[in-house]
Image (tube, rainbow, N blue to C red; front, top):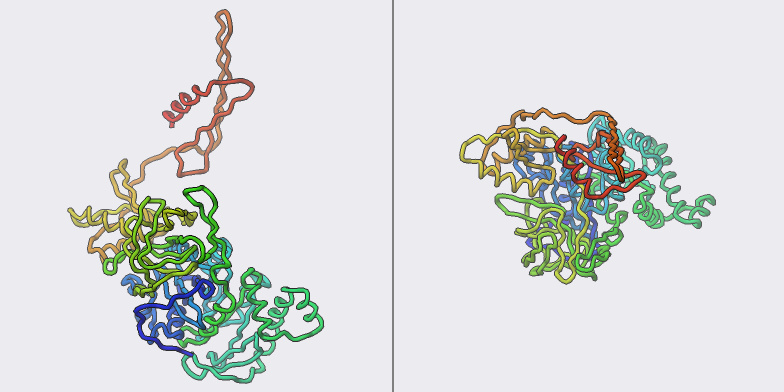
Length: 555
């Protein structure tokens, strides 16, 4: 049931146990943005449901996204559902924009992997799963496009099971008539529901053709429930029925431990299945206090155990930066401990700077919504932090804390760029600096050897989008050209040389035996590595710098 609300000027404050931070992951075009839009509509966060095709979704507010009809950056959409706040992080699906995905995953406590019921399991699905493994994120899978003729929920489930094994546990099953989605079977309740309108449903009988797969799916769930305790295992073998609440409680434990990955389904366009997904997020996903969070106290060099404890000293991790010509700079933060309040004075140990933060916001797409406080675990945004960048930690001067920086993918694709109009060099440089503040996988290098400026990104599309954004946002133009490449030589295989030195002219003689090995280091980012080893004698340490100097000259 939808609860419409007016465009909020402010948002209610939620405690840590009422918060769910969820990242949407999946292949490009699988339906993540459409799902986020349907979630916002069903929850009443918006009173009209936009579409990617029409360029009017909450997530894809950037003109480049609207033009290309796919996401280029992560968007935050806060949703209120069943007395909980769900921070939805909608991410791009194409690898060229993986830095945005890595930022979002670093702030999330759980993930929904979106799979197209038509296209099935794709490369992006597998990469999403790997990211969840890397960050130890509980996950659910949501199969979209079930309103499309040739969508197959059964095939998606079979493919997922073939890849990931018995952890895959469907807890909804589609009811289809004439290749259209008309309802679903709730596997937990063992009951049918038929859609009566946009997002509305009523009870119905379970069709006979659903029963074979329903039996398989339900047996999977009951086995998982039985494995949570010896008492449940005994009841399972004795044929006792588990109650709906017992199944849900056991599923929550299994989902949080990663032993079960529930699979739900629906249609984003028709907003079908979305209410079920939102309820499952609240029921099965952890609130932030279940996630570990540890930093270093820079004053004492001791471990600071934050663990999203709202009673601890206030700290927040800056996981993303947005720089917009119209609304300005916003630093997206996840509060790791304590409670952030408006007018707090926060300290950044990296820049050794204090700042009074003024108002605190959450952003729904690019629309700032004021919040009075952010409890530990919540996600929000702070405006105009001039000395703060992505990866920094905000804390207090009394308890200066730093958290480990997120590991981002390195950009290796590069092109030469040339400023279109003479005299715009400074404008281009300033605009690129702002874009690099937003995009951790964008890099500009001055190649003085070849007298050219290089721009690095995650792929050709990434660089093309960057050039297009410069023209659209900052009204300056660059051309991307093939770069000049200086001829280089490098060591390709091992080579050993050795020589002996003897000198005898009365008194103590001199003898030395030197072996030198040249071999590939395997690290293309480091020019050379020098190592020394002394065997069977003593050589003064001050000899080695001279040897290294000559080796460097050879290099």
